Image 1 (cartoon, rainbow, N blue to C red):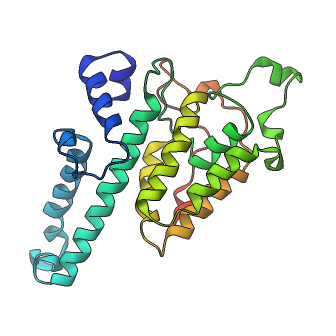
Image 2 (image 1 turned 90 degrees about the vertical axis):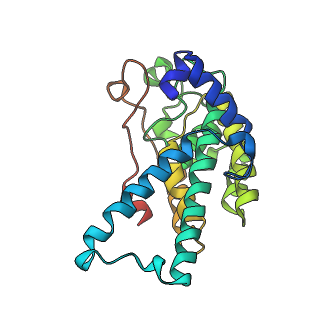
Length: 245
């Protein structure tokens, strides 16, 4: 969809516009979102998992959720959280990408903490000018976290201290709007995974630690060799899965 939007494909432009209008609304709760396929893909993955599940059990025994109301409730709660995570991530991406054709706003290797740190140091995009290399400007790898802009840092803290999903999504949306203005991307696939974990109070601190770690980590200048000709993907400084384990 991102590639189609950047090429002005009518179907992609229309889909992104609809997704953008759903930012801040619950998944499935708004009839205007019915027909968008971002959650259909998630349901296809679930069906594939359910189809494969009996094959991995002794003699094809059905999943416990078929027999236990408690197991069924647990499954439904997990699916609700999955829906919420994907819906928030995709609608925020649509808001982030709005009217931007020259750069992708979903970019691998740009976790939330990294993007916010760049924003807090007053930088834009993912590429630095040659002045930074020649010494006329600060190398991003040398910028201290203590020098981060206080206004942006406070917004980041507000995201981290949110206690419920609605407040969290609202505060994150405000931050995404600032990132859009600065043309700084986010890794929305990683964000969706983190949003799923964040909804589990027992895993919430794991997500906060990952955000804080990425904010304090000194990220070097992106290597242009990792960005393809269309600028659709970057693999620089990706976050190891162990960060959220």
